[in-house]
Image (cartoon, rainbow, N blue to C red; front, side, top):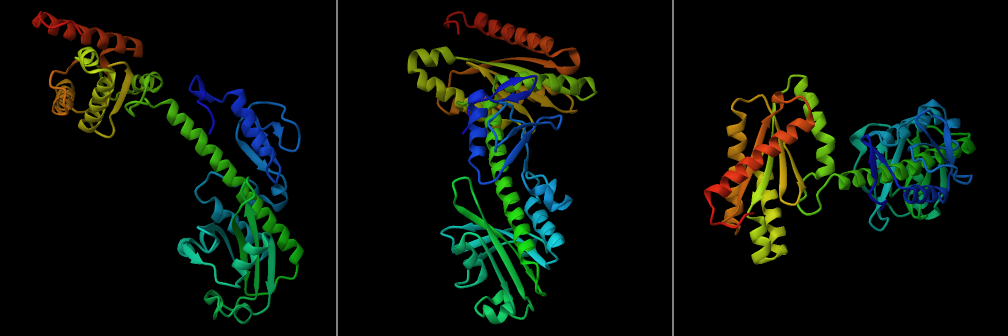
Amino acid sequence: MIGEPTWQNDVMALSQDDSQRILASLSRLPFGIRVFDSDDAEIWNSKAPPSASDTSLRAEVDGIPRMGAAIRRIDPLSGDFFSRVAEAIVEESGCDLSYVSRFIDDGSRYVIVGASDGPGRLGHSTLTAGAPCELVLQSRGFRHYRGDLAEMFPDDTDFVGSGLRTYAGSTYTGPEGMVLGHVFCLSKSEVRDVERLEHLLWLGTTAVAHALVTQRMSDELSSARRFSRTDALTGLHNRHAFDQDIKRFVERSVSGESGIFAFLDLDGMKQVNDTQGHLMGDKLLMSFAGALRSSLRPTDSVYRLGGDEFAVVWMTDESDLERRIRGRIEEAIEKVRRDGFPDVSVSVGIRLFREVDSAERLVADADGLMYEEKSQKRSERPSREAE
């Protein structure tokens, strides 16, 4: 897993160590990968020493361009990538059908993850003993069979009555060298140019292996991005996410969308920490975060800004916004009180987006209103220790 990224103008940048670790991993793959910058200039080649730590991830496998436009520019992150590879193999080879599989469990079964004949063939299949799909797995490479497949492999029920006379398949491996699946094609006619067919399947398996690497890297980057926007204790959005999002919300309000911003500060947090300990203080924060989240709509944005300060953004065209949002916040506090914190309350400062012209003004105004409410509570309860 890569480390936590840094951010500049909403663009995520990996550390140099993480960049070099990813590039080093690519260097160990059994095929070449070239990395390009946003201007389409090659900045790194896995077959040569790294020349840059930039990790723009438009990668292209050496050899794929020779297969033609049908596969060269298929996006490895697209949802139909594997089916498009299968379609390209059919187009280039002249076979009738092609499939991309993934072996599962102990290799006794596989699932079709891409097919040239549509999604109807997707699903789990058992590897029939002695059938082509099992044999290609055992060979860890390319296998080709020509003739009446139903007679050659009588136990493989898929061949019965199919009229198929050609099977060709090739396995692909992951970065650790484990066979992950195979790409195979079937035809009712005998394919004469076996060498070309082997080459096409090699290109197909190379493209699939490349896609798996790219998908894993993309998942890790997405995970790092989510981590960088999430408060570790409460699971809410954190201050970094708030700083990114609030300007966009203001821009939406300028375009005519209505919304409300609420700045929240828990009253009683210090007393819980002082009398019950910081573990109970953490429990209070988690209780309030969960109650707040469940009291609001899924479309509302909730943030923990730090300490016992929270923020809520409610974008809606509904009327009487302040009364509605205060009602939801009070619901949350009641849940917290029932959760074992009867003396806790919350001070709230609320501003409508249309009342301000900048994110800075919005936050400052709501913060000021929140402290006015907190001060009023203190003056009404002079005997209680200041929060």
